[in-house]
Image (cartoon, rainbow, N blue to C red):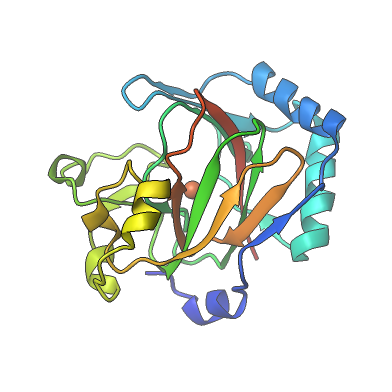
Length: 235
Ligand SMILES: [Fe+2]
């Protein structure tokens, strides 16, 4: 559990979508940066390609991103993993062909005061589901799949696996219509007690900002593939 839960809670605010934050040419630059970066993970089973946003590929985009985000959320630090050279990783690009399951990106250090995370879509179709429910432990994938729960040997930066969310909320059966519409890739039992706060429909130029304590996942709406850039902040 996080040590500074009181401080983390004080910083919490509603999830927010900022439209027209980046213009077409800026989005194109992010897309080109994505193409230039080396592949970190190509998980053929989950059909996902991950690339880390490494420093010094584009100073221009680093500054642009920092200024735009600061303007929205105020002072922050990036809460980054490190690369092999002990350099900060600024964010994570994910190219996914299948929806990403229920999880929280609360980080790997319970002494930090985690703050907001951002999502910038680089393709136009897709959506992300943010739940009202919160979690104050580390970055965790929430699942009731026995095989997933058995996975204990985690690499650096990999999420824990847990089913503890089921006990944390009220166990009320998840809304069937919402399940059918957005979350067919999740077992409905895995969503017990959860309530949708916001469904972010991806739109180029916009950005989603939400608290790192929020449970979230992709919706099942994917047209072939989608590419997004996620970053994590702390105070
Ligand atoms: Fe996430």
